[in-house]
Image (tube, rainbow, N blue to C red; front, side):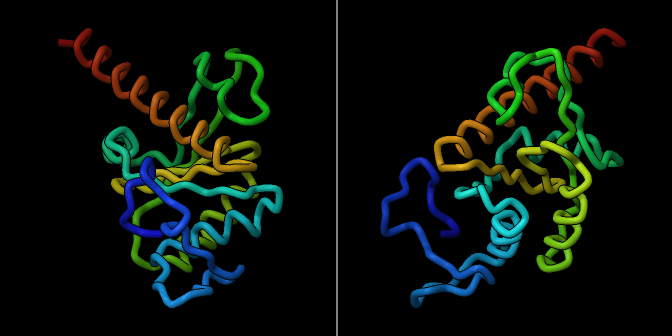
Length: 165
């Protein structure tokens, strides 16, 4: 459900939609529901998708204005992502341009995710992040790890800028 604090959700805050994103009750789904249902179709084992408007996701994607992905390398926290067992790895998190054309964005995301093996999340420039998991606990772990890693990347950029000053 759109507009609710994700840390304070109750069962009545969870909206049920069909596979096409149509509400199964009288409430109106978020315009971004199509982005969630696309993930469920793309990855049938996924049972939870989260979307956040975090400061690290918004600011880093605005800073990396020409990038279409961010490579996260060598961080211990990468092991919070499904299937990763060592910090001696790298994962590419796709970045997409923000748009109000959700159906077009959903298709673009689906096409790119098919070619980016193992990405547990994606970013929308200046908007936020989507992450998923086999259950809500895994999706929360992914989104929290992603926010931590994006914060680390921001700090690294600051430190490099300070070294040049």
